[in-house]
Image (cartoon, rainbow, N blue to C red):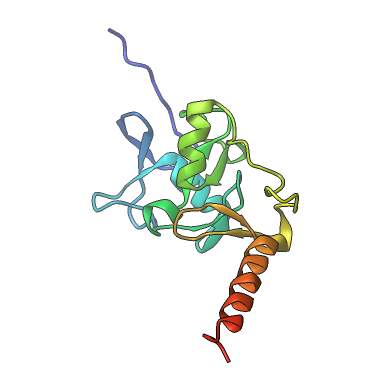
Length: 158
């Protein structure tokens, strides 16, 4: 069986191992493992967007490198080709979008309005940091106001 020559992958470095995703040897890279290896797609994305907090390309959730599993940046291949590590093909994704997008072969369908008809975007959109669920700020405020009014009428609040 003849081995394919992989050449130099996008992101630089040498091909270290052929696994599900391409790994490259980049000792000293911020995402390098103890042995100096980095997944090529993660290195390309890190070099493209840099460190810090970024938004998920698909849903807008705030995610960061090395955060908890649900809030960590995953390098997502837009065309679903794990060997295409060009910077235009790699985008930051949250755990939920990365998981569901590959199951559905498209971005998750996100509701544009809440059940009361308020638009779910801009300043009216709240994304819970613990689970990434999207909530309507207007509805949350209305629920808070109802609860406050009820407690005030019952004498719990002065």
